[in-house]
Image 1 (cartoon, rainbow, N blue to C red):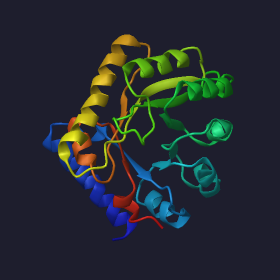
Image 2 (cartoon, rainbow, N blue to C red):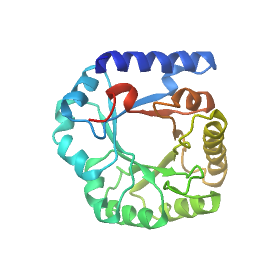
Image 3 (cartoon, rainbow, N blue to C red):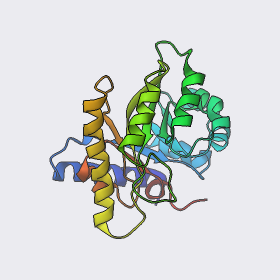
Image 4 (spheres, helix red, strand yellow):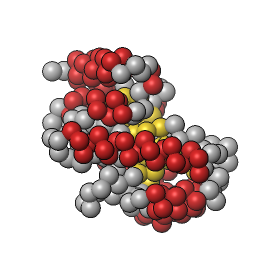
Length: 231
């Protein structure tokens, strides 16, 4: 199917899932994960109305999205992959949000780089590890709170929510458990750090976004279901 048809189908499925569980479809943002896909496909997604894109690698995103905002007004670009400290400065200049804040050291480096942003702080999401050793993210509540406490010292950072990746499995139970864990963590952080909104829950990808919406996701990250298999 064409990218435009895929976008329409995913939007319909997002809306249908929301309505089925009593949610407003407007509560859930749709991100097109464009990593490994080139500009012609990205342009088709933009033409179909996508205004939020996600990339995993700083260098790849910089190459593909040069002049992006001039060509696609009101669009956003989020980093959803692991960020190395030596790429922080470039990432800050390119992305509208860092969703993969996964360790205290990265918080400190981002804070240092963004300390001159004044009234325009960089939104960041704290990544929670769903329990798989091979994946990044804060491992538990104590580690996550330490990350948030580190961010409190930097006015250039704006903690805005949480992100996670569910286990890669066909079994529904561990997927739901991962998403529920993020929702519970959101509630705890709202009590512990009420100065931040914590409104964004970035969870759910092509294979599990309906479950994620059922469990409270406010941002789904869709790659294959929009662009097809990796190029």
